[in-house]
Image (cartoon, rainbow, N blue to C red):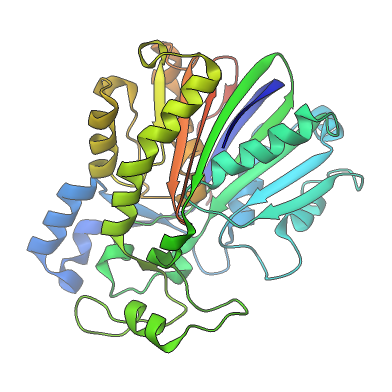
Length: 349
């Protein structure tokens, strides 16, 4: 699917990080020094940001939103979208909780989207549709995850990759166009999954597939399971196609794009995709070294971490943002964010 939504402005983007820092090279007593070095060299991650017990994605998103929200902006907001795989509760929707905590009008439309790696692009699409359709003047998009609560501490595939973060983006009426493209392949849904927690109980054969760790130990059905090879193969196959469709909708050539902002999965896959796209390394920011893969927050967090260089080198007028992973899904948007208020990430005490 591809489409262009008109009359949009990305007013502000902010992000927030939790206080705890886990240095990966300190995990040598758990996984062995040589294995730690091998994984760090491949994924390019030195440390992860972790939310302490009791801190939720909503807390991080609220902190990010408060970086730019003023009483005047709050009065204009008539929609809020919360994108996360780690909501505060199964019910009610976390967007309703954030409406109250942020002091938004009771007349706002509030909804949650259950999504991760591609979630920021889905959230932008939903918020932009609400504005472009005329129903809303201003929509607050909150995207974040605290996946650390679902990571088995003895599973190096997940423990050395995923970090926690939150973000907030304000979408308003304006003069810009946003061109989207999406791809979904639900046949690969079990390659990135938390089997427990929903209404469908894991079947015996599915449980057997996801419950064995590499070291021969068992993982709970409540632990996150990642089949990294299958998710990577999907991403390498579909991401270049989705990006091409977004550029096609925008009427852009690859040479005219000033920045390719990819989901910060790990350095290896970002470098591989860059080579497939045949674009210079300088146009593809890499910013997960000190945070890890922060799921739904990874793209806005990258923009906030790299903001000075992005503005100084004028990389934002023709930007491609692309998320990929859980679902299995990928999505891309072509947009101009050169006039967007992008802030330094906040760090919670």
